[in-house]
Length: 212
Image 1: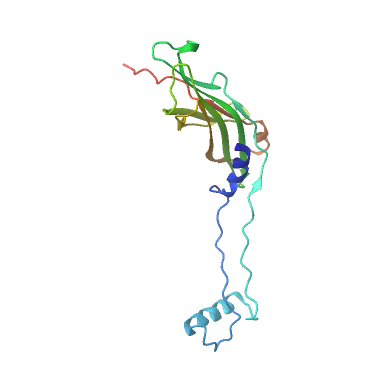
Image 2: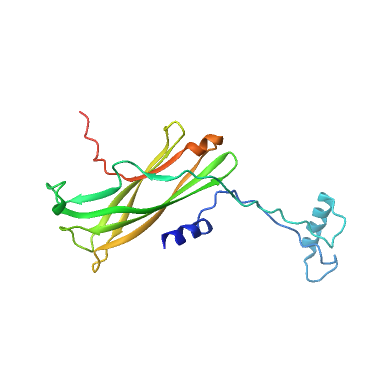
């Protein structure tokens, strides 16, 4: 299900190529046609003279927007130590029987689009949230996922945390959820892009302690 959803995703809401304006004048009607207002025909005549078209029976073709180019896309891997997100009963962290909820990744997908001077990157994840021994269905879970882009020198190019709200239905012990993260674009690095890495992980780091 997730693979089918992600394959159709580029056709839904995201397009990285800039839209080009297109239009053409209706030049086939004779100048004295009653169906076309006189002012409209005057504008058409000015367009013909301006662009040097002598044949009014042939309108200029509208420019076509070139389709986005597919590009090699680095593999997606899980950041070490972040493959699972486990919520324990307070004060019993680390005890298997004290688990309330747990989420684990199932699979990943990615897409890179060649925009010329830049590359657009999207990462898709599929994961499953489960009820533990001390958990109850019907609870809304806050699940933070970190998306990271590393260059060929293992330097962080981009890092972002997205918090997903996932609810396990009252009559079920688990639910599969999916998400596609649009990471925007980065400057095209040339051939070194083949050595870049895309990583994901549940952001399990505790909040930083206040300084002072």
